[in-house]
Each structure stands twice: as C-alpha cells, then as structure tokens.
Length: 362
Image (cartoon, rainbow, N blue to C red; front, side, top):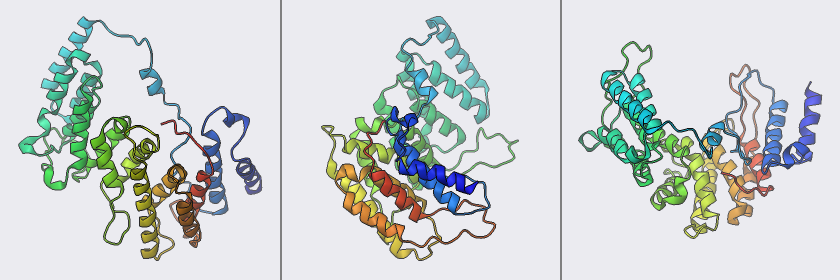
C-alpha cells in the first residue's frame, strides 16, 4: 500500500496539517505536518524492524492528560479530618513494620497524598531527614522513594522542594554515599542499578513533573542555563547525566526567556541556542561516520526549530539545518533490528518547525 500511503502523507504535508480536525487545536497542524514528514521518510526508507522512532519533537499542541484534569477539579472530594488522621496513623504504623523498599515506597507515596496541608512541612522534613547520611546524598531504593514523595508534597514549601531537587541535580559521585542495600528484596532476580548517576536522573524526572518551578526560581534557571551550554574539549555538547530527562526543562527555560517576563533575559536564551549551534557544527566536523546517530544533536535540532525564530536567530539556525540536511543518508543495514534514523531528516523537520508560529501551551 506504499503508493496509497504516500498520497495521504503528501497531502498532509502540502496542506501543512491544516484540516478541520486540527483547526480548533492550537499547535495541532504543526504536529500533524511534522509527523507526516517523519512518516514519509520511514515509508521511503525500507527497514525490517517494526520498532517505532523514539526521537520526536515535543508536541506544540496541549496534550490531554487525565491526571491534570483531576487535579484541577474545582470541588474535589475530601475525607473528613478524623478519617485523614486515622489514615496517616495507619500509614505510620505500616512504615514501622515494613522491611522492604517496595512496600515502604507505596506507603511513602500514600503519605504524600493523604498529608493534611497543616502537616505537610513537618512531613517533608521527616521524609528528607534520612537523605543526608554523613552529609552526603543517600543512595538506595528507599532514598529515591523518599525524595520523590517529599518533592510531591504540594502543600510543603516550594523552596524546600526545589532545594531538594537542586541538591540531587548538582550531586557529583563524590557527593553521593555508597549504595545501601538495606531494604532490598533479596528475592529479586535482577540486581539493583548502583550507577550513582541515577541520583541526577531521578531529580531530573521530578523536575520534568514540576516545570512551573522554572519560572519561579532564579537559582534553578541559572543552573539549567549553565548545564545547557556545557561542551567538551572538542566543542561538542558535553554528555551530562540526565541530559535526556532535562530537555523538557530546557524548553521551559527557553520559553521563559522568550516570554517577556520581567525576570526573563533574551540574551540568555540566545546564548543557549548559539552554544547548541556551535556544538552541533563541532559534532559534524569531528564525526566522520554518516551512519552515526547522536541523540543529543537530534533533540537540540528540534528545540532550535521551535525557538530560533523567537530569539531572532532564524538565519543562523537555517544555515545549520541546511548543512546537516546535506549529510549522506546511508541505507539501513540488512536485517537491522533498529528503525533507521537520520540527522538529515531531523534537520529538515526542524526547518519545517521554524515556519510555524506556535504559542507554547506548556
């Protein structure tokens, strides 16, 4: 059905995604046109795998998330104070009895859900107290659970929650305690992941669930800006722990600096994008194998496509996209088990993204 599929995709591309289905949803036309471009590439690039492409631009439309709707309920059901008190008492009892992290994690999450607003600050301090053994960052399965539960205590002071996440984001291996197996389930068939970079990854995931912190905390914005511009000795983007999990935060940071907010700084946004353009060129100059695929470069090409125009950098970004698009795309290896990926396609898609004017809904 190749010919029929191509006609559908080409019609979507020609219409720039503008159909009755998309006209009522801001950003949907852009998302549909971009997806059609990627699908057309896959159609014209035979491969034996049924894998899906894992690198896609962040959606411009607002994606429906049932959890957000539930949290926004103007009149949520609330159990009475006695029921809450009894539930919290039961949870404390369970926490004293349970030995393994799996069950204890469930209780910690429940405590964060049930905690009354007036007790959230105390509970936050109680949850994080075991997270600094000897002044270092605790490293265990329960530490991950405690950190996520404490960060999710929405009635606790935001400054404390942000401070906790920043400490974990900044932690170097020397700042992190050795793996503590206490609470590990000895019946597990797979051993624990004791790579200390997990601390940074978990913190980045928590940040991705609380992106609104970026607008409210200058210290967090400063740290993100510094990380976004890091490069290695060759000028390429430096591989930092959790870079993949941080890309949503980088997008939110750039959106903030393009927003006109009193604390926004357009020059910071331009500095980040310019560093990405220069590091992309350094990557292209050093990497001689056209079949190689750099995930950092892909993500940054897409973000450039979304933000270059908003920072007055269309020409610089387009020059980069043109150069990347000229790279020879080798045919996929016979019997390849992975979907064929191409930076040339990524650059073409990023260039297309620049032609859309989209107000982010994030």
